[in-house]
Every structure is written in C-alpha cells, then in structure tokens.
Length: 397
Image (cartoon, rainbow, N blue to C red):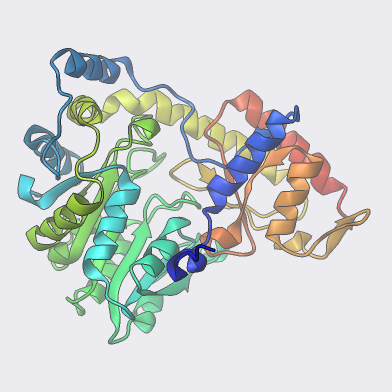
C-alpha cells in the first residue's frame, strides 16, 4: 500500500473550497443551493482585457516566457505600484506567478526554515497557516475579535515577536472580515517591525481596489520597513480575472530572486496569454472599476441591513473586500429538533441543510465565533439567501 507524505497528513483542506464542493454536489442532486462560500466576483472580465488576450493569441504569444514574467508586464506592474501605492519596485524586484496564492507560497518557501515562527494576524485567509506548515515553519496566531473590528494592534504584535520570528503575514482589505488597516494603525505596526529587521512582512493587498471608504495604504510605503516588505497583489479580484491565474509580488531583489528560483523548479512562468491580458488591466485607470465597486458597496449595505434583523447575530460594517464576518456565538447551545448547534461548523451545516445556503465556518479563518458570507453575487440572490438564513436561525431555540 502506498504511504502518503507526512506533510499531506498535516495539511487541512481549504474550507472555502470544501464548502463550495459540497454545494455543487447538492446542486447536482437537484437541491436549490445558494452558495455564498467562494470569494469570486460575479462580474465578467472587462472586454478590453479579453481583447488584449485575443490579440496576444493572434500575435502568437504562445511560448515559454521568463520565469518572473514578460519584461513589459513587470514594467507595467512597476508603474502600477508607483501610481496606486507610491512604491518603487524595479523590474528585477517583481515576480509574476500563477495567482497571488503561488506568490505567497513562493515567499514562504524562500524565507522559512524548520522551526521558524510565522506570525499570522487573525482572522486570516485560510491558506496562510497551511502554507507555513508546508514550509516547515511554526504558525503563531495573533487574534483580534469583532470588538477590535478584527484588527490586531501594534502592542499585540510586539508581545508575539520572539527570537524565532521570521515572518509576518496579513491582508488589508482583509479576507475574511473586509476590515482595512488605517495609515496610523499600519505606522504603529511598522514601527514595531522596524526594530526587527530579520522579519519578512507579507502584505496581501489583493482586495486593494475593492474599498468603500478612505485611501488604501501599503505598509511598504513606510520607509523604515520597506526592505522587509513583500507586497502581494494580482488581477483576480478587482479585474474579475479569477480564472486567468495571475498574481505578483514587489520585494527586495534578494527575495525576488529567491522566488524566481523556487518558481523555476515548480511551475516556471504563468500563462503567456494571461500575462498579455494583465498588461492591459494594469495599465488601465482604476476609475473604470467604479461601477463594480459601487455594486459591491450596495450589496454590502443590503447584507448588513438584513443581518441586523437576525436576532443573536452581531456584525460590524466592513469597509472593503466583499465579505461579512458576523459573530454567531450567541447561537451556540441552541437547537432545532434534534439538531444541536455547539459551534460555527454546526451552524454552517445546519444552514446548508435547513436554508440551503452555503457559508464558511470562522474557525477556518482563525475565529471560531464567526461565519463568513461572500456577497459577490446579485442583490436578488443575497435577499433570498439572507431571508432563508433568518428563517432557519429563528427556528433555533
């Protein structure tokens, strides 16, 4: 009998993908499932980006590219960083990967050794912890609940740093909470990290343009920690290009070269056509995203209003991304008939069975009191889904 690796046994399945899979299986059985589990925009890729891909095919951009990506794509990314973030990254500081997920994995494999500690600000995106494990690092979770708007303070971070700390990773705007770190909050965190130049900071900014108030601030814009920061971004969310699989980093030349080396052995470069399409996206003025962002804001407002009418469920108002992350701990200990709710996972399974609505339990994101709803779908579907959820929760006594 074949014995699989220990690292596979230690790795958890992605909760968002698992719930999406379960939803599809029930749909295939004829169930009227509404899935609010995956973070995927329901918009189509803009036509001018698709036109760039068609042109690339016609011009025969169909061969291997440099591992880090086409030079003109990396130059376009460099210009984007300068325009949108005030960051200076030369082309040799940029690596293009098969999605932001691979970009983050590249960095972790490049900087972590066995036993190195990686601080993960919670709530966190589901894959951070598993990536650290694969890189043989030790995840150290620093948490902030709904009373802190799900944002870790500089003081909390300072207490978590040890002589073994090698990495910090967080997202802003955040998946799963939609929370956004403000400039003063990031500066306080930066001032702590500047005292520890051995710590590499992965700033996941994939939801940068999906923001409903204030300005996006990149932590790399604070000069005292710029050399330590790896800024991660991509085209999946803002440009509705999830299936194109293209992400990228801006980093020090040392880390960029390391990621190029790792990627060169695993996948080489990402799809040549996706790269040509991404050039069109990155050169476009982000103002063209205004209508999509407004649609997300309208949906957020609708979902917040609907959740506010559900007894025993507490929700903050997230200023970015397309998720809400309500605290449902007041429902623990309730039941409907023989179905007992002892935790968020029980509640998600109950909502799937009773309301036919798929959401994701918060423990997958490092916050066991919450569940995640994605509102990356139409207002009519959201209204139907939250109406069903309310009816199901009202039955819990």
